[in-house]
Image 1 (cartoon, rainbow, N blue to C red):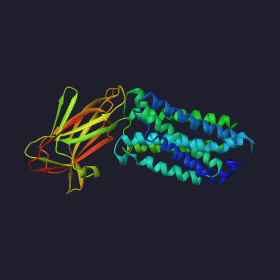
Image 2: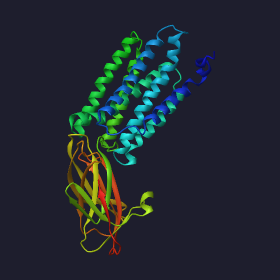
Image 3: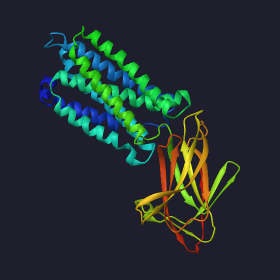
Image 4: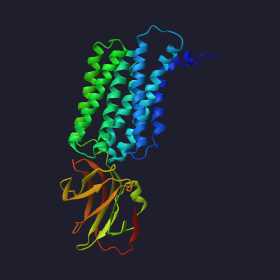
Length: 361
């Protein structure tokens, strides 16, 4: 019988990276609402698998086992750990990509690259232990950032700091358990792990207060610019100029406006059940002479999450007297972080075509 473990031994690190990639792809399209009990359960299971595999591997490294079941298990545990991390990164990427514009999710893409590089660089067990344990700290913090608002029904800087504190407490307990199962073999590694994890926590907090991280658990489901929006009962009807294929490749749509005709911007923002907050529609015009965006209006709008609003809490704002030029409306959370954005170009000319009516569900 072929000993596949011996055959695959030279490719162990590559298998770990493959496990990470497999976990990433496995769950990429599998997540729905982040406040759903199934989503919470799955994420907790993956966090538990990652923690358990790190703990078990650390325990087995202290045993003088070179053959048998435990030796084989020790070889495969790094793959299990990386698969669990892969599933977690896929979930985090899905939720962070949904919340805010793409540019706000770049830290996770950079992290993903660092993870694959780490699989090739950290060959010695002690280095891999530090790497995997710090990744677990990052996973705990990432989970806490968007799950604490789900449980507390609040959002803002104090909720974010509470998420950081909760993740830090759990990680300290994990380090104590890691030291215990290894019969106090961590030694100096404990300080290296602790300082590295502290650096990760500080970096994420800096990104938050620089408004780089997206405003989870809020996410923009739909947005658009129209000539008229009417609400009839529970249904929103939006009337606007027909879309062209240019809009699907990122070219802002053109709004033909004359005199004091109003322009309406619609947004549907997802919020977890029972979370009530305000968002801001920030109307900005690009000043080509100064080369920057200039804020013209800031309009606060109330939103609330519920089971019935699967596609987000619908609301809109309007402005009149818009000058010709390039415009955008940022949909911001109350703490100033960007949820989403819609851009359009205003032309001072009458619209001669027929408006298209869209039902905004």
